[in-house]
Image (tube, rainbow, N blue to C red; front, side, top):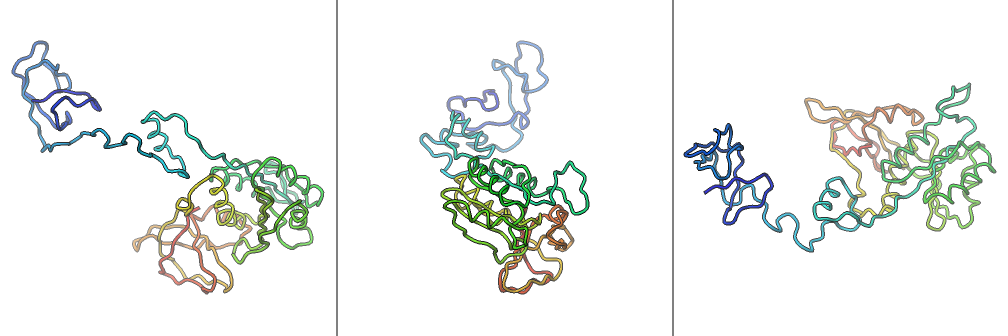
Amino acid sequence: EAIKIATGGMLPANADAVVMVEDTDYEMTEHKNSQPTSPCDIDSQDDILIEVTRAVAPGDNIVRIGEDVRKSQRILQKGHQLRPQDVGALAGVGIIQVEVYRQPKVAIIPTGDEIIPPNETPKPGQIRDINSYSLAGLVHQTGGIPIRFDLAPDNHTALQASIGEALEKSDVVLISGGSSVGSRDVTLDVINEVDGIKILAHGVSIRPGKPVIAAVVGNQYIFGMPGNPASAMVVFELFVKPLLQWLSGLQLPQWSARSMKAKLSTNFSSDPGREDYVRVRLVETADGLMAEPVLGKSALISIMVKADGAVKIPIGVEGLEAGEDVTVFLF
C-alpha cells in the first residue's frame, strides 16, 4: 500500500520508505471527481495503482527520530564561531538565545603630519589616509568593532591624548605609523609613558612589517603598526588577528588561516635571518594552480589589491624555486 504525504510530513504507521512524486507514475482504477493531471492532484481517497520507476530501499528519504539531533545532545562546542548554518540548527531545536563572547573593540589611530583625509586633494608631500580604513575593514572582517579616531599629528602631546582616549574606549589600540626609528616617529616614546605598560616587542624579523611595536597594559593591548600599507596588513594578519580571535573566545583549531596549495611560478630569493611573506596572486594554468609573486614596495597599496595571499619563506631559507609546492595563506 502507498499513502500520499506532504514533503517533510509525518511518516504513516508501518511505512518504511518515501518515494518522490517525480519517481512515480499512476493508473486510475476508480475516481470520484475529475481526472487528475499528476500524482500530486490525487485525492487520498482515490483508488489508484502507483508505479514506482526507481528502486526503493527501506529507509529511503526518511529522517528517523534522533537521527539529526538527539535529546540532550550538545549541538555546538564552547569557542565555536557561529555561522549561518549554526544559527539555523539552533532555531531548529527551539534555541533562540545563546551566550556569546563580547566583540572586541579596536581603536585605530592614524598618525602623521603628511596624512590627510581621503576626501581631500594631496599637496606636495601629503598622502591620503589608507591604513585606518584598511585596518578597520580587517577588524570588522575578524569579528571586532573598529573605532576610527581622527588623524593625530606627529606631536607627542596630541598622540598621548589620543592613546589615553582610545584606552578608555577599546580593548586593543592600533596606532598607524610612527613605529620606526625616524626623528618624527614618536609612537614608541608615547607608548612607553602609558602607566603600567609592558613592551613585548619593537621590531620583529619579518618582511614586510619589521618595525611593529607590541605592548600590553593590564588586559588591553597596543600595537604600533608600520605606516606602509602592505606592512600594516601583514602585521595585522600575523599578530592582531590571532589576538582578536582569542579575545572573541575562538578555540585554537579555528585560528588557522584559510590556505590553498599551489606551485610557485618563478624563483624567489630571501635574505637570511628573517621571515619573508611574499605576496602572490593565484592563477589557474594547464599545469595546475600557480602562485605568481606580486612584486613591489610595501608602500604600494596596489600590491595588496592584486595579491590573493602570501607565501611564507622561513628564517634560514634563502629562497624558493620555481615549481616548488607552497602554501598560500589567503587574505
